[in-house]
Amino acid sequence: MARKNPGQAPELPDSGTKIRNADNTWTEYVTQVREYKLITPLFGGGVEPGEADPVTVIRASEVRGHLRFWWRATRGGQFGGKLADMKAAEDVLWGSASTKNGGGPSLVQVEVNALNFGRPEIVYAVNRYANNGNPVPDHQKKSQAPEYVSFPLQPKREETEIGWKSKPIMLDIAFTVTLRFPVETKYRDADWKIEPEINAACKAWEAFGGIGARTRRGFGALSLEKINNEEVKKYWPSSQPNACAQWVNDILKTCTGEWDSNIPHLSPQVKFAVTRKPDSATKVWGDLVSAFKNFRGQVDDVPYRKRDLQAINRLLAAKGSRESIKDFQRATLGLPLIYQNLKNVYANGHRVETITLQGGSKTQQRFASPLILRPLACQNDKFLGLAILLDGSSLPNDLVLDGYDAIIETSDATELNVATAFINSL
Image (cartoon, rainbow, N blue to C red):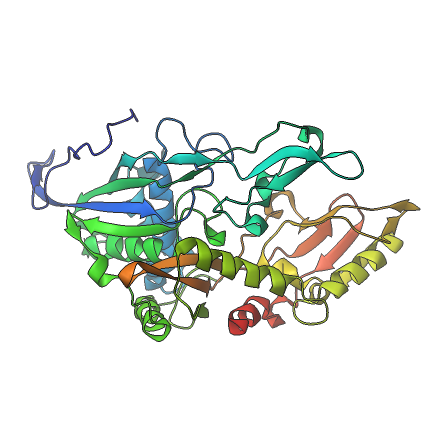
């Protein structure tokens, strides 16, 4: 897509426009222009991993992907848990690759126009030597990104030299998303109203999602500013925590039905918490991340960090060892899990300083965290922190310590309530 001037008006027709079809019938279309700004930095999102796109800082294909996910999470329950039926409807709405058996373009046209391309910020830089004489990367004190969730920006060991700087994150981005779609379409011999499907996906994306990478840890969080040039701040949640929680509940109440067991989704039963004190987006995000860091580091309480280290020692002591997921409870918060600066851990007589816990198969090495942490824009220019737990996420069948003959069984994972324990702690 060619870069457009900031503020350039969309070229799509207004709602109510009718288009003549090839068979001489007419289809009425809806056009929505949604204006957003980012309340947290954009991490990545471009063609190159970890970098924003230098031409189209927000890409239409990326927006479509996020909306597709949140449609599945909010509206995928209307198919009675039948994965094939949900996928067929998803492909009609959002498009699929064309094959001899079908497929084709999305019913929803997506156009993105930048209003503000943002400004770069460096999160890590190497400007000094440690006491041992080695150059050391420092988290920049003025950075808006919490250190604990921006670790992927740190340099590799071979890159750590004086003068190195991390890839930048982007601040103060604003853009519009223009959505154009038919009022209804024929699907399985019935009239399917499209606007409720789109509105549900947009509402969840705006409340719980974001744009770019690491959105589940708060990067790229959205604030909806206008719809078709109408200000919508009056519809934002109250900055009073109980009223904000009710606003979230009202969204979740609309996410009903039955999903396939492996589809991450929302429902009226999902666990969530909002922080108790409104503040700036950066402050509530940082406080939420700090609470999560402290929780994950608990030694003698859930998620029992001590058990991880003890189990790693047992697994490396004998080939072909097996352990229970109950000794690696932090795995339920996302994989891969990298253990660094280990002490008194040995394998084959050699000290192990770093080890990675991941899925056992090549296709399931990663596990997306079901826990979302982000600031939420509220009325009166205040923000609250939100932690919410998606339903429908399952660990791989087996986990491994990368490079070692050891297996962690995950059959007992459903008995663990690690993310729920964190939300309760808030």
